[in-house]
Length: 438
Ligand code: HEC
Image (cartoon, rainbow, N blue to C red; front, side, top):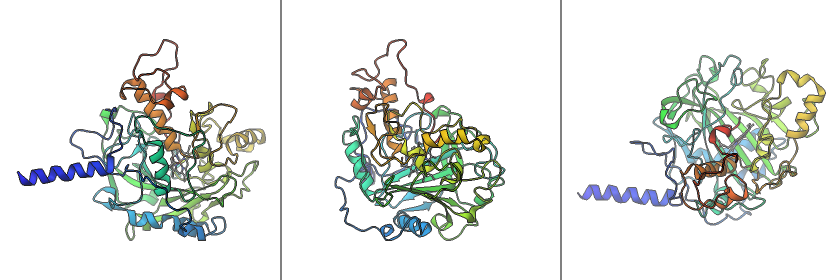
C-alpha cells in the first residue's frame, strides 16, 4: 500500500511540474495512446526572461567567417541536455529546452514515444543519389530559455493563446530540432550503423501520405539531421542565423552529437542573386557527393543556398521560415511547383527568387499586402500550433469558447467551438494543411 501511494505521488509531481499548462478542454492529444507513457518533454515555460547581457558562447564567433565554430558553440548546451537512452532520445529532465504546445493533434501530430511530429516526406534523390520514394521523416523541436519565455507568454492561457501583431523572440533565442527517418541505409549509406530509435509512425511507404492516427505502429528510425536557429542581431537583414547538421557514420563517441557533421549555415536569403554566387549561405563542400552533388540535388537549397538533406531544394531555411505568419499568406511557405529543370530559365528563376528569397527582419510580415493577425518571427512551429488548435476547435476536439486567435485569423469565427458552420463557408481541415516543410 505504501509503495503504491508513493508511486502515485511521484507521478502527480512529475505531471504538475512538466505539463501543468496544458489546455484542459482538449481531449484528442495524439500523445495519448493506451498503455504508452508519453515522452516527457518540458512545457513548464519559464516565467522570466533571462538577462540579455549574459554572453553566449557563439557571440564570440563570427558566423560568416567561422561557420563551423559558430555552429559548434550553439550546440554546447544541447550536448549536455540530450542523450540516447535505450531506443529513445531523452533529456536530463532539467534541460533548458521546451517544446511547443498544440503540435499534438491531427495526422502529423506528435507521436507518444519521443513526441515527434510528421514532416515532409523526402523526394527520391533528396537524401542520397539513390533514395527511393515514400520514406518518412519525423522530428521534435525545442526552444531554449529566452525562446521558451515567449512560448510562456503566448500560451499563458493554454486554451486561448495570445499573439501580438509582431511577435519577437529576444536575442539569444535558440531552437534545436532533431529529424529522424526510416530511409534504408542501403540507399542512404551515411546512416549505416546509426543507432535506432522507436516511434509510433505511419506504415512504411507513407512519406507524404496522411494516415489516421490510430493506424500508427512502432518502427525504427535513425537520426538524420539536426537543425538549429539562433536569434542573432549581427545578422542585420534577417536577425536570424539558421544551420543544420547531418548524422554521418561510422558511429563514434556518444553516437549522437559526436556523429554530427555541419552541412550549411545561413544568415540571409541573397535576394536578387539569380545565379549560384550566393554570399549569405555557407555550405560544407566536404559533403559534396554525400548530401548533394548529383542530378536531382545539385545543391542543398535553391541555387546554392543553405538547406538540409530532408529539405526541399526549391527553398532554403530562411526562405520557409521568413514566411511564418498567421494566417499563412495565400502562396503558402514554399512554391513546390517550381520545376527544377527550369533553373536555367532566367525569367522563372527571377520570379521565384523575388517572391521567396527576400530578406525579412524578424517581426516583419511576409506578403504584407495580405493582412495577418500576427507576424511570427520565423517560428513555423507557432504557426502550425495555432492552425491545429483552430482545427481542433472546429472539429469539437477542443471544447468551450473559441480561442480569440481562431476568430481574428478567420480560421473559425463562431463564438463556441464545434458549432457547425454554414454550407459554403470555408471548412478547415488538417488534410488541407500541408505537412510541415511541404
Ligand atoms: C519547406 C519549408 C521549410 C524549410 C526549407 C525549413 N524548415 Fe524549419 N520548419 C518548417 C516547419 C513547417 C516547421 C514547424 C513544424 C515542425 O517543427 O515540424 C519548422 C520548424 C523548425 C524549427 C523549430 C522552430 C521553428 O522555427 O518553428 C527549427 C529550429 C527549424 N525548423 C530549422 C530549420 C533549418 C535550420 C532549416 C534549413 C536547414 C529549415 N528549418 C528548413 C519548415 C521548413
